[in-house]
Image (cartoon, rainbow, N blue to C red; front, side, top):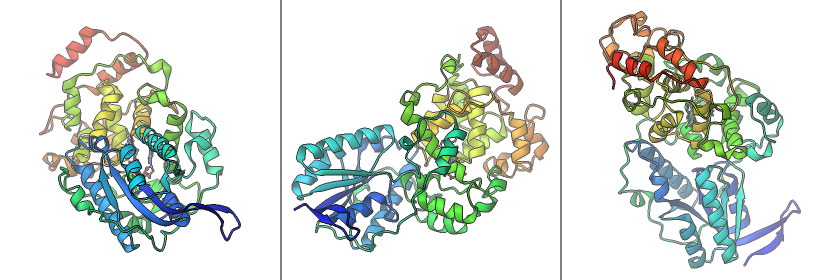
Length: 470
Ligand SMILES: Cc1cc2nc3c(=O)[nH]c(=O)nc-3n(C[C@H](O)[C@H](O)[C@H](O)COP(=O)(O)OP(=O)(O)OC[C@H]3O[C@@H](n4cnc5c(N)ncnc54)[C@H](O)[C@@H]3O)c2cc1C
């Protein structure tokens, strides 16, 4: 039976006989705030993951994200077994499964880490409501961020947000509990529960990667390496942060000890939190441009151009290499995300929502809030407005991949071509797709489209005719 106890620290503490710990975007036992609290407060903890069909529906990427996600569950299962427990994976709706377990297994409390994404918040509220009806405690903890989005007063621009964020105390990471006592239960292995799911082999994102990466990654050189996609110059931790295989506190600790604040890496962690901050205060921007003046851009939205962009055959090698990396690895280097996003929204004058949709289908690290924030930023319609900027693919290619090492990796048909020619597809005829648009013409058109000007339909038809696309 639950009761009130006094811990050694003298603080009042509720002790539960048996608790569910509900894993969500925190697939780890190390430094997991909610799990540690559940273990501390309970006689027994039942570790649960609810595999909802609505979550699975998002894995339409040919199985790459699903492959990674199932490996993450297997990894969590192994961690829990090493602590004397198991992982109970059930398929269905959390709002139905959790109350049923509460009833059938004499559960006294449900512990979890707080969700922040749209569907996650709704799901938390639904389960909390059910728990209340059943008279069991529902406890949720802030675990996902160094500074929870609602703890900073509304800011619309990154720098003022970051100045406050930097000044806030960050919790130190905590080790996994030494042991977890769990009720005796026949839990089917993750392998059995996920056997029918069409996953692809997880070739690029091994679940154990953060352990070695945090030890070996050169955080001190990050400022010099981060922009060059042919180098292994960024941490590649985004899928692990997204699914919580590593805690942000561990990453912060490793980065700070390598290169004290405000090293160039730390602001990147704050950007992740900034987009959640924006979505917390301006939830309408999930589907609407943050900047009201940019809510009526006259997008061209050509399906053919969109297909060429998605399939990496725009004829601009730097753009196509990025899109092919995405297709192959389920991930794209940040510089390329910016280049390809600028190309879609400014050179092809295509709605940023179309770009978000494609990324949602392919990125292993896809995070709706972060993706929307970045797409709007790239499309010059989001928070933290920058001067209206259109990336020139030739300059981007020359500056960030001068020897075309990155490009040639993903576009082997250009292997024998000199870099000078690859950088300038409008000037040289490459043994490859012709550019679908002329960057310089489209740049002028984008200025018109963005300033609310009416784009002459005849002009658009002419461009489409010139480029052979209907
Ligand atoms: C159009 C576009 C869409 C994007 N969509 C996503 C997405 O769906 N999910 C996602 O995690 N990131 C997204 N990003 C941000 C960024 O590109 C990736 O986080 C980064 O490339 C991941 O690689 P990394 O782990 O090596 O990053 P590092 O450079 O090593 O950075 C460390 C961590 O900081 C965070 N971070 C870095 N840059 C950003 C940023 N601009 N915004 C928010 N967080 C950042 C990530 O968690 C990242 O893992 C997007 C960027 C653009 C331009």
